[in-house]
Amino acid sequence: MQPATTEPVTLGDELEAWLKSDGEKTLGSLVEAFGDKSFAILFVFLLGVPALPVPTGGATHVLIVIAILIALELVAGRHEVWLPQRWRSLSLAGDKWQRFLTSLTKFVRRLERFSRPRLPFLFRHRLADVVFGLLVIGGSIAAFVAPPFTGLDTLPALGVVLLALAMLFEDALVALAGLIVLVVGVVLEVVLGAAAVHGVSSLL
Image (tube, rainbow, N blue to C red; front, side):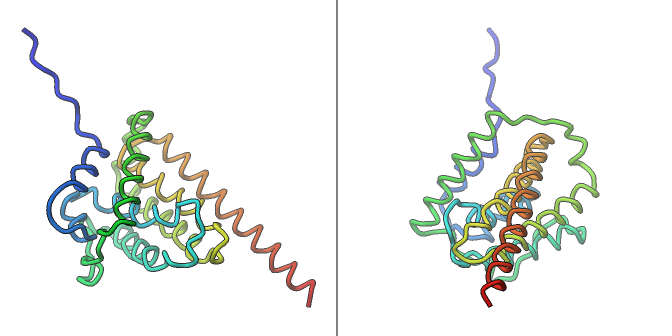
């Protein structure tokens, strides 16, 4: 009789278990639940909101600022996320957050079906964390400065989300996709922004 095989626990499983667990749902509890995965997980959560294909009107700026500061910690070499108590207590409860987190978990599960470790050694060096942190900072700044209600923050934020998931999956293909989305988003923002400035100046 062959021993029963157990399916490996996936990131989607861990996210769903955290969502269904008892206890408060805050940034602090998220850090405690995911340990050394917290940096990437937080970037997925924090940039996941501006990555939604709907204008946010600048309402996500606080989340983006938190992401930038956490990325600076990663670049500086910290192994654990440090958050001020005010940010640790930021609630992820409520109907809107629950709908967002449920949708995010579904997105992660869909991506997991196609993702697998590709060139995993690229993600296991200190330099990888530095590059990842710098890309998060760049994408976050691009999302932050996007004009409100334009939706131009979507692609840079989505690029950061994909890069964070690539770090968790150790998948170079997902990382490449995230980098492309991030670069396209930044270029689109610069081109359209320059065109808008030129259009306004021509009317003056």
